[in-house]
Length: 173
View 1 (cartoon, one colour):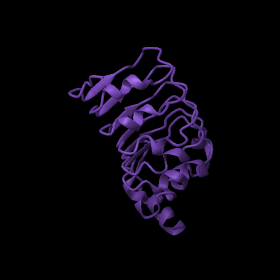
View 2: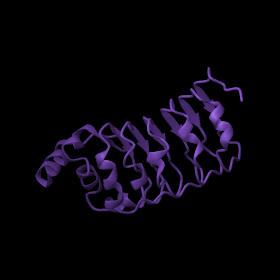
View 3: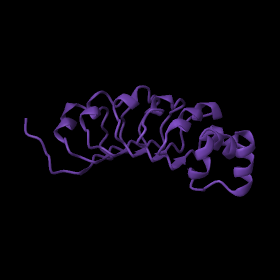
């Protein structure tokens, strides 16, 4: 089967796709894939063959589970999962190259659900707007605590921790 080795970026958005089949493997050297605004509920096993993939947009699909994604998407730096139905993000906890994670408008409802992301050593930007967890008292401080000594490096919902938040976090750690 011939591969499309020169393609670096592909956009499959707004195509009513339900799954990601083996034809994606033809894009062996692709770096950016946009699958937003489709009907994907599960990514399946084929994305793991895209070893150069660093940016994936799966926003506005029907995704509710990200379990075992760390086994499939090891080199990702940017992952956009806004406008889905994700409640548990522990399946992303070993995406150690991840720098940017957009989880806006999902179903994350507890601070504890976000804690697995605290072990991501490169994460610099985390978006959680539109999730029920935002209603938790001291939401920002409690989420940033998950990052321990790195908490001051993480922009949460587009904003770096302010002095008060840093002081509160340093007392907690």
